[in-house]
Image 1 (tube, helix red, strand yellow):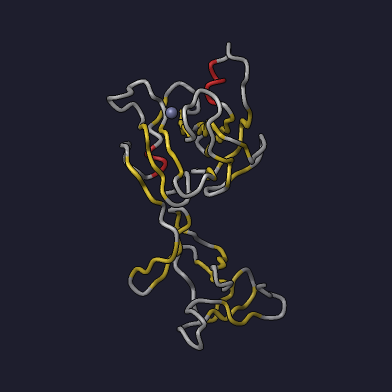
Image 2 (image 1 turned 90 degrees about the vertical axis):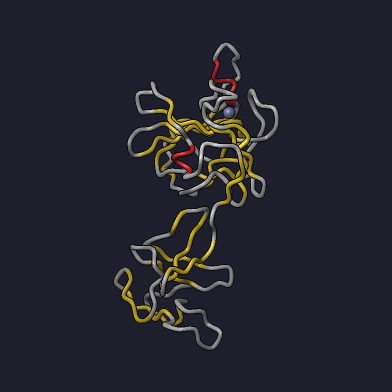
Length: 218
Ligand SMILES: [Zn+2]
């Protein structure tokens, strides 16, 4: 499951814990990165700041609301800056904005709150992050992980699937529909590729080494 930040996510206040039973979200500080990443696939419904203090929403400062496929409302609050527009489609891992201290906030953090589509019930946001609803530091898994003979790649805790992926060394890999790295001769999107079947000549297993003339991978 995706976390809000790459690296360490420090939960400073949970959802309705006994010390703050009326806290309807989860407060998280990104210790290694301040980019707020989207936790669901959905559509941006708000990207704004309310400055009129007669409207209690002013407390959220700069905030973004993303509705998921079930219509649930995900709010990301107190941003220093916002990176998305209303109507924009966003995916897990997309940057929504930068962590900040706007609105009713005492120190940079993100208040993440989730509500049902009818806006009547507040849900436990920790469940959308795949973490416990408890103070502590949670780290999103990023990098390759081997399971049996197969390799998988995680980005901010999310396993990448059905896509090309370029690593830090500039090699391209293809991650199949189950997330496993493909090797050998593969037809992908109608084009043929040779994905290194075993580590040889310093080219990592799975790296794209040959393609046909119409399927060039940069
Ligand atoms: Zn909060």
